[in-house]
Each structure stands twice: as structure tokens, then as C-alpha cells.
Length: 477
Image (cartoon, rainbow, N blue to C red; front, side):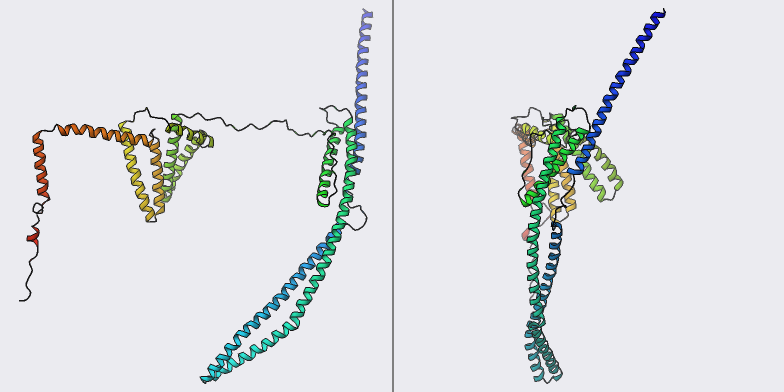
């Protein structure tokens, strides 16, 4: 009906009016916050222009920088005067050295003159006489320089150095006093600025601020607190130099937001858990290590033979094994420590229940023979100073020792097994020797007699020693 339509239109109009009113209220609140932020920003700009201004050069009177400049100027003059003194002393020393040389050479020339005159070599005598006259003339000139110009120059330079040094000390003392006075005034200004900034900081922190909101007040508090820290550092530096700084740290003032992304997370501690090691892991470790050493030795041999293609191929293979070695964790310090403990525990076991086969003992015997042979070859190469060959043999020796370790038994167990096998073989041979027939004994006796006959000189086709002796020939005829 028409009445219902009017009512609905009325309700809709009231809703629109209410929404518009709420939007206007929200707009007024936003404008109010903007005006407040703008006023705070203007206040903060004025604060920065006043409290952050560097007024260290506004003090009246002579500035420490100008005094430091004068000190540097006089230090340069003192350095130059010192060089002049050193030059004058060097000139004096040179003259004295020349006088000593003349004192030595004049008697020599006198002796040469007399000797030449006695031999009637008057040309040589005249030359020696001229040398003596020149030396004496030079001696007189050097003595005159020492008594006159050179000595005067040394005394003058020393006097100048003393005067300039005294002036420099005065300038330094005056500069130090002025710097100390200026430093104390600067510390007073810094403390006043810090006090002013802290009062402003308390004003900003007194206003209620949402912890998740970043506005002008929050940023201003952060900047003010940072400036306070800078001023405190400057004041402490001046206090260490001149003394008299009183720190104005106030622990009651809460820190402003830092805006750092530190979430308090701590680095994970290093993994110190032990590594589980068994016989299969040890076997893989030894196998990889032995193969890598063998490839390295072959790479060195190929490089020495200039077969670089082969060396590159072997290097690729070795790199793959090294990557597998590192990926398995065999190169870490933790693994080596755990492996050492594992092998130490294996060596302390009372007995090895595993049976050592004859094939293993035969292989061990061959490897031991090769080890002994390589050790002898290394000693010979070192004695002949063939160190490249010795290094090659040493690499081969280490590879063979690694193969021995890969047998799965300790060298002590292998040596004991070899001894047991040898004793067992000898015990089996003894009963056979006791059960041999008498004919065998006779046969053995005949063999022994044959050996004795074969060892005689006649059996070897030789002659009797007495018959073979040469007959003396009488040479009297």
C-alpha cells in the first residue's frame, strides 16, 4: 500500500542520514588527528632547529681550533730547525773526519817522499811533496771552518731550535688551557641540551599511544632518544679528555620504539650429539679415503709425465669421490672424533670373534712384503736425494697401509693369526718326519754324502790345492 511504501522510504532515508552522520563524525576525528599530528610535527621541527643545532663554535674569544693551528705551525718550524741542527752537526762531523784522514795521510806522504828521494826518484818525491802541501792547506781550511763558519752555524741553529721549542711549549700550554675551558663550556651546553631533550621526551611519552601505531609522536620520541645518546657520547669523550663530565643517564625514562626486526630469536646451538658409527660406515670411510689417495697419486704421476688429459679425467673422478666423502659427513671434526673413539673401543676389545681366512692372511702377507719393499725404496731414494721419487713411493705406501686397514682386522690380530698358522704347519710336519722308514734315512745319508762329495774341489772339476800350486822356476840358469 502507499502507506507502507512511505514508511519504507522513511526508514531508508533515516539509515542514509545515520550513515552520513557517522561518516562525518569519523571525518572530524581524522581531521582532528591530522591537525594534532601537524601541530606536533611543527613543534618537533622547532625542537630540532634549536636542540639539534651545533653551537660549539658560538663561544666568544679565541677558538681551540685556531690555537691548534698555531701549534701545528710551530711544530713544523721546530721540525725544520731540528733538520738545520742535524745538517750543521753533519758538516762538523765531516770536517773532523777529513782532519783525521789528513792526519793519517801526511806521515804516509812524508815516508814516500823520503823513500823516493833516497832512490833518486825525484818525480815521485815531488809528487809526494805536492800532496803534503795540499793536505796541509786543506787542514788549515778545515780548522778555520770549524773555528768560524761551521761552528757559528751550529751554535746559531741550536739557539734557534731552543727558542722555537720554548715558544711551541707556550703555545701548547695555552692551547691546552683554552681547549680545556672550551671543553668544559661544551659539556655544560651538552648537559643543558640533554636535560631539555629529556623533558620533551617525557612529554611525548606521557601521551597515550597505541603500541601498534607509528605516528609523529612515536617517531619524534625515537629521534630524541637517539640524539640524547649521541650527546651523551660526546660528553663522555670530552670528560675523558678534560674531566668533569657528569652522566645524566636516567633509568626512569622508558625507551622509545627501536623499529628493529629483532624478534628475540637465538641462533640454534651447534649439534653436539654423537654420530652412530658401525663397521659398514668405517668400511665405506676407509674405502673412499683409500681410493682418493690412490687417485691423487695417479694424478701426480700423470702430471709429471705431462699426460694432462689423463690427469684431468682422474681429477674429475677424485672430485666426485671427495664430494661423496663430504656429503657423507666424513670430513667433519665430529665424525673424526667419533671414529677415533670407535676404533679405540674396537682395539680395547678382549678378542676378535671374527675368523681370519687364509685368503686374508695371504693378502696381508703380500701387502706387508710390499710395505717393506717400499720402505727400503724410500730410504734409498732419500739417500740419493731423489725426493720426487720418494714422495711418490710414500703415497703408494700410505695407500697400501689403507688397504691393510680395510682388511677389517688390526695388525696385531693379523700377526697373531700368521703365527698360529705357521706353528700349526710346523706341528703337522713333525709327525711325518718321525714316521719316515729306515730306507728314507739311508737315502738321506747317501744324499748327505753326495753333498759332501759335491762340495770337494775335485767334484767341482778343480785340482788339488797342492797340485795346483805353481812350481818355482830356477832363474839362475
